[in-house]
Image (cartoon, rainbow, N blue to C red; front, side, top):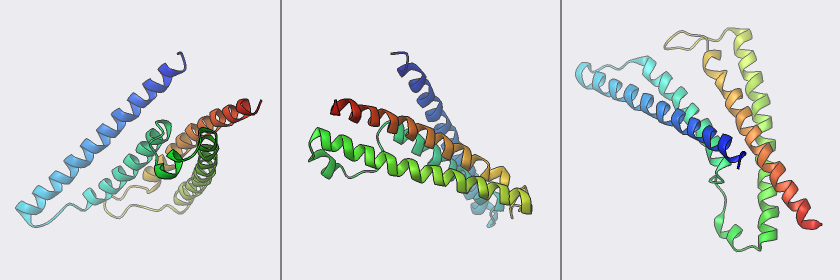
Length: 163
C-alpha cells in the first residue's frame, strides 16, 4: 500500500503538468489565431513555443501511459494468449521499450551537449536551443526509470512463476 501512494502522487503531478502544458498551448495558439485574424500577421515565437510544448506533452504523456499500461500494443494478440505467454510478451515489450528509451536518453544528452557547445540559437525568440532540449533527456530518463521498474516487476513475476 505504501508503494501505491507515491505512484499515485507522481501520476497526479504528471497529470497536472499535462493540463498546464495543454492550457498554455491552447492560449498561445488562440493568441496567434486572434493576431492573424485582426492583423493578418502572426507572431513567429508562437510556433516555436507550440512545438516545444507539444514535445513536452508527448514526453510526459508517454511516461504516464507506460506506468498505467496504456501504451500502444496490439490488444488482439495479447488478449488471445494465455496469461503466462501474455506475461512474457509484456516482458519482451518492456525490454524493447526500455532499451529504446535508454538509447533515446543518451542521444538526447548528446544533442543537448552539442547545442551548448555550438551555441545554437532559436530562430524566433533568439534564446539558446538547449533551453528547449534540456527537458528531453530529463523526461526520457524519467520514462526509462519507469520502464526499468516495470521491467523489474515483470522479470521477478516471471521468475516466481518458474519456481
